[in-house]
Amino acid sequence: MSQPRNVNNNPQALAGRSCATAQFAREDVEILARRDLYRGFFRAEQVQLRHRLFRTGQWSAAIKREILYRGEAVAVVLYDPARDEIALVEQFRLGALDEPQGPWRLEVVAGMLEPGEAPLDVARRELIEEAGLEQVELSYIGNCLASPGGCDEKLHLYCGLCDLTEAGGIFGLPDEHEDIKLHVLAADEVFATLYTDRCNNPAALISLQWLQLNRERLRAAYQTAAGCHET
Image (cartoon, rainbow, N blue to C red; front, side, top):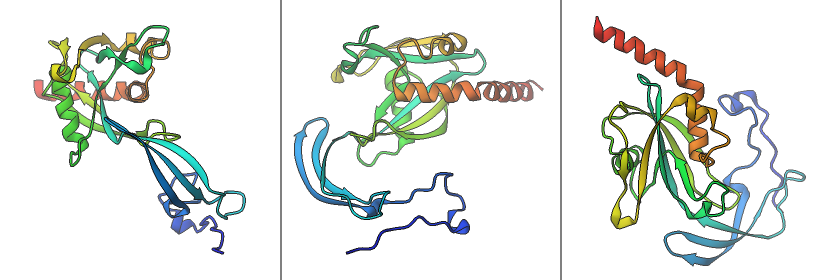
């Protein structure tokens, strides 16, 4: 029988790690069987597996889990530091069909990675397709797993600084049945309704929260840069 794994308490080994150091890793999961449940635009599987247990360090009994494979995606929160405005897209979402405020949701620009694509390239492509914007200064915020209990989707989040003076309109690819409306809104208005309006999706909430925390820094940096150009 294999031996239980113990957490590494060596300070040097833990340097640069998070405050809650992971006790287990990928090798502490054993896939026993896989069965296709669905293959279409997305893919779903039933997976039989076992994994190490916190209580004993030994293997669990075999368990079955179902997972939806969506892959990686990017999301960009658009911000104009000169005008203190945010651009959000509105589109129909089937998953929000029964939401009290309806299935047309407010989101940040987003799109899925195709095989071989880099997140930054996808971000720039989606900015053109969904917002008609090319001149955008992109900064990486971080990434998050959208719903790891049953889905593998990873979101790469960006902040996009741009001039929103002439922004707005209807966008999207007709051959993909996209019908997307771009709204330009005052930052104060967006933040005032952040938890009560139609932005209740992970990409929008996380990136807008980041923007709320970094808004003054971004505005100050813009004003400093603008002052340098004037002199």
